[in-house]
Figure (cartoon, rainbow over the protein chains, first blue to last red):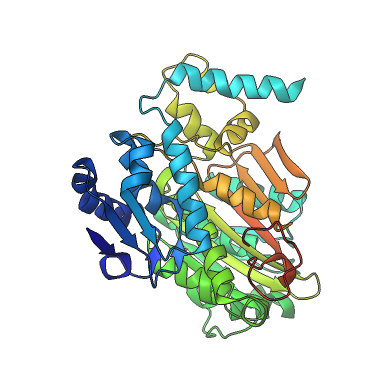
Length: 116
Length: 303
């Protein structure tokens, strides 16, 4: 399966809604173990919300190693590559359920460190 | 109720100027009626102040108050030229039409308009003057994508009922390009306190600590099972690499990111909303990809 992103989305991969469209188009194929190619030829502008939804959320039910094996990315410029890598790294560490007590602990712990 | 006249002071981008701006917000915020802004004593108005005043006017209007800018009191020629050129004056009733110049247009976004904002950043902010002549198209695209994160954050997190207000300027003598984006929503610290509201300590979390958390990679108040929290981190990284400056005023919190690091403070101010102010150094050597001619910093991956 190969998707030409410019045809699907346009030259700007910016917003989460467009990312969701790509996710919806490729998620099933990847889950079935098929190889998917995303071709970014002609796409020039990128931001993290697009990739969070297009690629980051794939890691909810696909292991990072499988994703890296099955998902091929072509013609993505340097800016886009940097954002994708950051998104994958962030998504791999993400735990969906919010533990509010832990968040408050984190905030106060950071604060205490700074005060030392 | 009679009309309240609020004097617009001379407003630069120094801490005391922000204190004055938030004082003006407070003065107008407490008065649910007709307000007239008077320019008699104003000798300078930075883009932050322009965007802020525009947003403040819309905030008052959203509460069914009326706002007028008394253009007859505008005597300073620099201020007059700037706010006519950037379109602010015509948006608020001055008969003059804006024109192209070093001022970056005043912009109001009541709803998320991706192409409108990206065009503004790419062509109006970066695509003329220094940006047009000194930056490659690739670099402009890369910077615009980073700046988009400001707008995305504001629309996604601020709960601003009236949207986002922007303005910018290229200051040739200082060799700086700046952009301000302001929302009149909850504010980042208040948003975080609400987010963790089930914890008994939530409402006593200090604003500086909340801002520090918000700037940390992967931290987000978004729910829904998709990892987020990269916007401010990417922006922070870009600013530091390129020796620019990012300042955020939100509620009583203040964040500064520059080449020397990050600083978070609690200040003696009060503002329901967030001001993001970015200053880029206009030195094209700082904004080149590795494979672009003349690159002097080998380890830099991108702008």
